[in-house]
Length: 259
Image 1 (cartoon, rainbow, N blue to C red):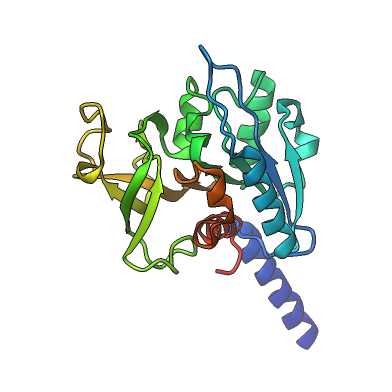
Image 2 (tube, rainbow, N blue to C red; image 1 turned 90 degrees about the vertical axis):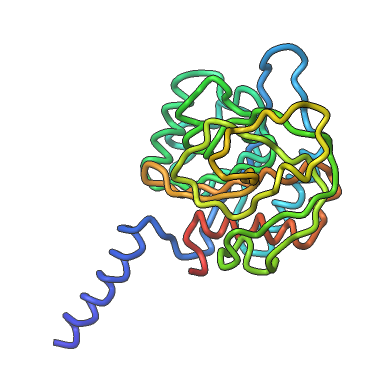
C-alpha cells in the first residue's frame, strides 16, 4: 500500500506541474535572450541599451542558476532549438522579429505548447503587421511622449513583478502608448496620461482604462504565459535594482517559479 501511495504522490505532483503549465526551477532551466531588430520601414530605431540589457539578463540568469542563450538571429527559431527553452525574452527587439513564416510557425507552436514569453520595452514594436503577436504580447506600440519623470500606479501589489514597490513608483522613462490591447491582460502598472508632458494631442487607446494607460501586464495566451513591461529605455536602468527585480519577477511568473 505504501508503494502505491508513493507512486500516486509522484504522479499527482507531475500532473500539477505539467497540467497547469508550471515548471519547477531546476539546474536545467534555460532562457533565450533574443535581440533581433528587423529592417522595418524608413530608418528604424535600434536601442543603445541592448548590450546592457543582455549583460543584466545574463547576470540574472547566473544568479538564478539558469542556463542562457543570446541570439540576434531569426534562424535560431527551429523546433529543435526551442525544445529545451523554458522562456523566450524579447529584449528590446523592434520591427520584424522573424524573417520567414516557418520561423513564426515554430514560435506559435512554442507558445501553444506552454512556452513562456517576456517582452521588454520596444518588444511591443516588434512584428507590427502580425495581429497574433499583438495578442500574445498584449498590444501594439503606437507612440510615446518624451522621456520624463512620472509616477507609476502599482495596480497589482501582490504579483512577483510588483510586490516590492508599494502603491506608487517614481520613475523616468518613455511612457509608451499601445493600442490593439488584448482585453485579457492583467494590468500590473499604469500611468495617468493626463499628468504627462506630451507635445502632441493625446492619441491613446481610447478610454478603456479612464485616464490611465497600462505600462506592464501579464496574461495566459493560447497555453503559454506572457509578461510585458514598457519600461527600460535608458541603458542605466539595467543596473537599477528595482527595475531588474521587476523583470525577474515577471520572468519567474511566466515559468511558474516560486508560486
